[in-house]
Length: 491
Image 1 (cartoon, rainbow, N blue to C red):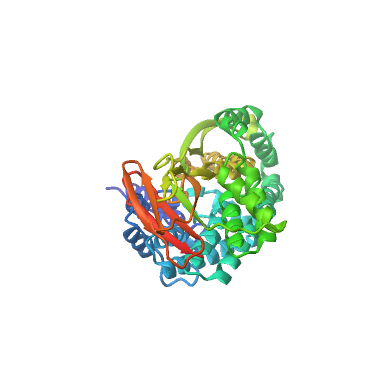
Image 2 (cartoon, rainbow, N blue to C red):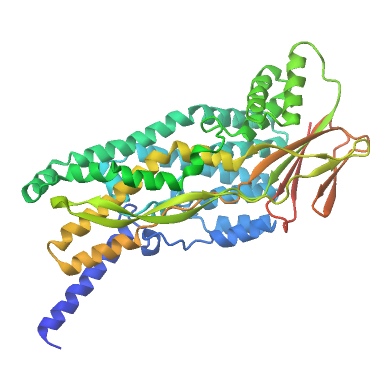
């Protein structure tokens, strides 16, 4: 081999190492190459498979083992922390569940503080990769469910004060979510505007082209044809019935029920009224609201009840779809490049409903109080414009980088193009162990203290404590092949 050939091989090898090194270190400083290009090497699928068949203990253990135990705040592993907390709850390990959800809450707070404190340079570096390559960030629905599950765990252990705190936090998160989300979107807008005003880049481009860097970004981001093509793919966002911004009707209802059982009727009635407004066809919610409203008017509650909460199926998931979009490059040159975006696919019910009966009452069916698909879609719609802008911005940055390198080095241009293709992935991660919907039924407290639950061809008797005045039976069934997890809360 000649010296010239040796030199060529060495240059190519060095360039490859540089690319891999950049992939391994950009944005986080310790990201693996597979993570950087959006390849999921975690045990997510195994966790889900175990959870879906009702093996909550093993699912929780696997999620826990995938966490970084040495990190004070394990911000790179929020998703397994959420899944572990969820699975431990249904494995009847309330202590471990609360520990996991406390850690998840700390991570969420830390991540949002980091986002708001990050510089424009940090934000741009992240966009050179893709959302799937970055640490999983909780959406508002995740945050609200963390406190909801902590409250449910506390209710099961009769820790009234703890449950009150968690429900108050969950409701407060719902109230403040729009404000928090607006701050996160504003951070993105700030980064884009600062990038447009980058004077050094602007000056250099004006010297060599008829189209400025700012114009490239503006023309690409504002292209109506691109926006219309994307919008047509998400046409369901204009037709589905949204919930109020970031409100989860189940959280609101459970908080109202909790405060009712603890005789805080003035707080309960407002929450149940709000729940009734979002679940107008649910006879249980309507009846609960009337009962508490009557109690505030001086009519005593004389009957004892059992509420059955059914956490049903698996929530909506995200899938990737791609389309070619134009990026308006220098000298009015247009290059069509791939854009990857996530879309929500409907969740799946385990059963349509449960049949609940006692020795004194005929079977009644559980009724939907909240549809998590609608919760997800409501938030997805709220963040839709920011998501599209972020994806187009990222694509433009990578395309311009590829164009610039092509002016200097064919090999480097090829490498940049390869990197761009490898990092064009949509972030399809979600908290997959949440349910498709939440349902509720209410029956009078049976004299024999036994509640019969039928699901499909199966049935199960649940014993209520003989000293309980009222009770909540909480049933989690993720799939039709799963063994149910049943939590009993005696009041």
